[in-house]
Image (tube, rainbow, N blue to C red):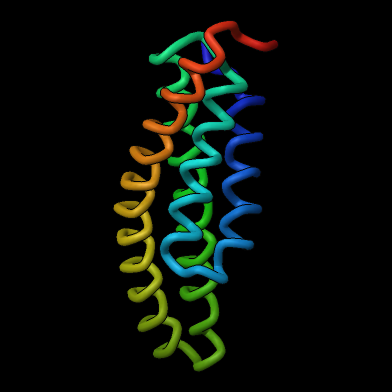
Length: 127
């Protein structure tokens, strides 16, 4: 059973650390995702599989939420240039959303590996 509390806390940890990690582009976000997945896996406990699952969900949730927000901002901001600008920015927003989905899968895998480590270090579930 999924411990959504652990997933949300892992997502929030990754989000806060990625904002701080902007100082070191690329590496800061990678460390944030790894640490968020670890926290989700550790809080969920239950061993390797449970930690993997909860880390995967925390990483995927972060990637999907971030990518969707960026795509919506780009798509809506084009309407300031009128209907033609809205059309072009809508297409750009869709492209950004597709790229963000691909990146979220990569983030989810990194987070899942860290979550598996966290789940192993805390074999007892906390509820």
